[in-house]
Image (cartoon, rainbow, N blue to C red; front, top):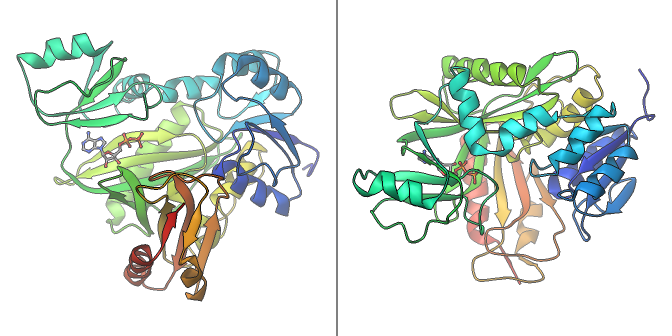
Length: 377
Ligand code: ADP
């Protein structure tokens, strides 16, 4: 095993890239980041290259300068990665996996083809086709842009026959699910095909922001449900030949049925607690997987609750962290700030993990602190 000899390139230098770099520092790995400046990872990598991970030339030149390429975001220039793959460069996740996942429509087609349970979905090439379908045949649906959120709008709940707010872009329409719980299964798969699962995380969304706000681990689900979720997650990872992390988000319906919502082939918000709560963090595990090292133990050392620290509504500009000092007084509380230069409503500015032998107590603590702090400008 050759340590420290491989140049790892990450497309994207946000908080996920930063936390990958922090983890890589323990193994003294050489980390190169491509992103625009300023960004969270800029001062924590071995080499920062200013550019755009969406730009063909930038990705090609960057990719040629490193040995292994990975991503912290799916929406990167895939054409350049395909050239790099053809040149023999290691790209994890592969462009095949990225292409399947990057578009919510092809993701759904993949689940249907592979008999993975997912939400009932219709596919439309644009707004006209969607209206044609729904004007005489209306029932509420969840509109989702096939590609990256359009004008910041990626998901819209459509409850009445008013389609004015819908962007005109290729989209899918899902049947609304009666969700009992949202859970995430995070796994890592290395080049040899070995897989390690982290314990399931339960995600609690903030309705007004449509964002993951709180999460707990272990999830309050039966062993059976967790094993079933692992079964589907493993099938997705194997079929897509994922190398690195794969996060699989599920809905547990009010009839106790598991359906896949979506997947991400990279470190994931639902795994941030693993930094302190598990034997191996998701970030180290990703690095182990893409370097084909043995995967680490994923055992949960202590139950955890996590709070995403979001920019407060009504504030945009240089962040002011109000009352954050309170966090530092809490036992076994671990604050992570991402160092973003500007705050915006609901922007992820950091996260807080609280460990406690009682997961309910940990959740109570983060809910209380959520009431007391605020990121303003
Ligand atoms: P994003 O890609 O922006 O994370 P998601 O597809 O995960 O968007 O949707 C965001 C949230 O909206 C989900 O976590 C869930 O709470 C809710 N949601 C999404 N799809 C459905 C659906 N078909 N039925 C009910 N709620 C949904």
